[in-house]
Length: 129
Image 1: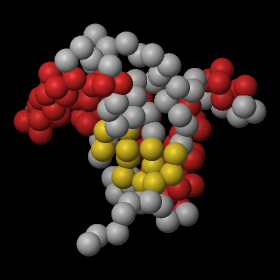
Image 2: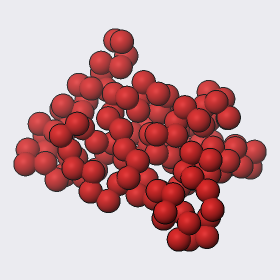
Image 3: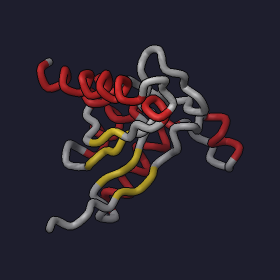
């Protein structure tokens, strides 16, 4: 059995620059996330949990081998809810996410099965593109 991946959390997808400032981090997510990802990589973690909006920044700073787990996945018509840094499943995978975390767009949908199938179709299109 393969060992589980050990991942660290960078900045919650519900946080923006104002929220970071409120907790004493005088930085933007675009600066803080890649910094934390590099610290995680240097500490020997397999990957990080990060917003889809920072995937390219993480790849640029940490290279292709770091696993990126990406919450904050929303479709064009989906409500963002408390999430401030979101992206579609297609765009997150195209940007380099390894794993997607998709909760509310499925469980909050009037037809969860249909919502899950729509997102799965988006994901399959990335492989073809």
